[in-house]
Image (cartoon, rainbow, N blue to C red; front, side, top):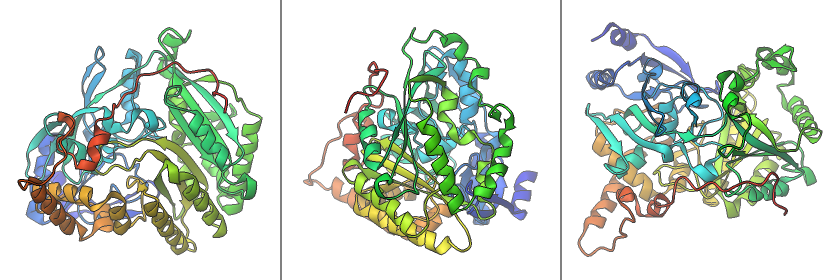
Length: 535
């Protein structure tokens, strides 16, 4: 046993979710090699501990915590193993950040096919949660661009998995939160770009209906990205007002500054606001506004400033467009000392208007308006625990205080009930409050049963277990695994009707996911107009 392992077994290290409202004392190990992960499983078995994974701590809630048990911190397993600039295929260890990937590969004309709102998430983390970006409606989640991964399972085996070699494990482990095994390498298809810039069109909408019309006009044929910001405070005719940003890639030869725009100094975010104010000061300057009426004023000022801002198509560097959460260093500190939570839900397009309108009204009725609201467009995908549906997502940031905690938790439970009844889903990567009952009704016993039955085969002693899995599913895992095994036996019974898989890639999927799996993952780009088509 190494000195690091001995120390981890006796010394508890405090970790917290990125939102600062979830904390845990964990026994932290720092693997440098897949063999270290194998040894960690042996240690866990010897001492009756569970194992969970930590990338770079960007999950808002408890998704990366493991109270009292082993936590594998992958910050030292952060090497780019192989890069082929001709094919755009990269293989890297799970602790590599998205920042390191794009900074290393952009000079060769490649960008990440999907990115999160911060560049400091890790490759292993975004694959484990199957993260999405502002282009989900067109390019799908991160998992759509993964070609293969190597995973250590609880029995100490190192498995190399592709869509073709093991479609069941491939589609269950991506988005499976590390509950089936530990990623030790990931092979990813990067996206070829012909400029370090994209074309961006910002435009305002005066109400929620306008926001939906704007999203509908920003279709996948003309645009590669679309994202909306909403002011949650005004009611009446202004309910849901906000701004949409649509963007598209430059075609080859279209950008006269294509070559110089690929330089890193063109991509890095500015360090000062209005040229003179260091951005590191902004959270401190914003702290006096960190209350309900202050944030009402901040959102109003932002909306009014957008009215007089640039509404024409203009170029913007990839990093500056995508990584808005990195513009203000440590901006989350305005939520100190008790932190924040984010509640993000996904709704079918036919239900989204009604539920989102009611969600905004409920926040206002209870004086619990979200300080920051982000809206995105999505499409369905074939991954087992997918959060995405053919519709919209709505992400709301809430300050947590000692006074509002219970009321806030009650509000999110009511939100969750509305979402489930509307056929929606949740994003556990950011969650702090959703219940197992709501997740179960959202995903369904068929999918969850298959997932937990697979987990029981790969991890019969439930060694892979983190704080979120305990909180959300608790003792439901065994019950769901029994349902999955029973369903599998029925499918294998001679004479029982079955639905044949459409391709070899989807052979291991539950029936209801096969259609989504057969959909193309990279639609052909169509030329974009320089402005939105008329309504």
